Image 1 (cartoon, rainbow, N blue to C red):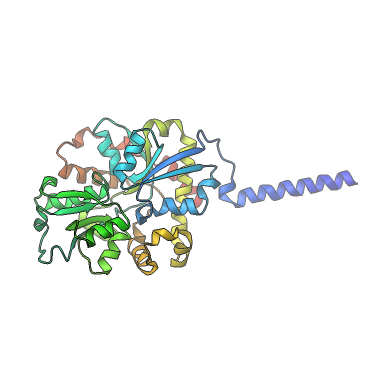
Image 2 (cartoon, rainbow, N blue to C red):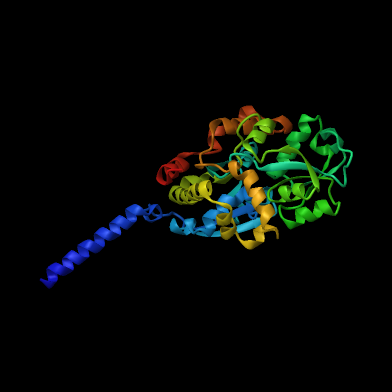
Length: 348
């Protein structure tokens, strides 16, 4: 009798455990990770550009996938990329277009999950330094702040300048980061204009410090600047890393797509409770105003759009004479195999 009861209890416990596994996506049986400790380099983690990464980290989505992350924060995307090229990090959380630039230099990197479907970058001129500003041509000889030289903020500034007939050499680019240092650089007069990401740009805009002259924080603005969708923040890594660690890349992708799914329905109070206090730059109201401005720029499912990668190549080639579009194999710059699996799993 006791033996039968124990068997029944054992069966009931096993059934309950099985039901729990089916109910919780993060607990489903997973393929063994080739590498559970992963180092990610990011350029300005407190910005909205990298919010999906922060959400996935803060809500424990990476841990749920069996990953132990070490996230290193740098002043800009170009610096984060250098960390991976130099071997001190495995994966970059950064702008997709770096994979194109790298291939042009015979270095093969591949994006495997997209965090943003718009660059979320705005270019503004200092109202104090340039009160008579009339057109982009007025920026000739001026100092433009960017997150870091060579980063996506620098790329957008170059694109806007080139369309006005200016070259990168016609201005001085100064790295100012993406947080309090960037605010101080513009307000103290160290720079005349700034190309940067939120929340910094919204804070400067709402305080009357800058006049926005080019804006890719919305899908509409992105189409106006680039002519179509433009993939922005992604997780990307050396192609060899992606090929050798498919289960690890899938786990990373799962966590990001889970975070993107959460962001689709998150309210202001959810965001405030989830991000670290230091990310708010001392002003919750302005931080939330910034979030509302860029909200639609986040990817819904992590999938990189085919037309987006073509637009990225065209944009880069428009101001970089050293880049030869005909020699770039876009299919080698990204893969959607992991995102599509994660999209199905999380119904994103």
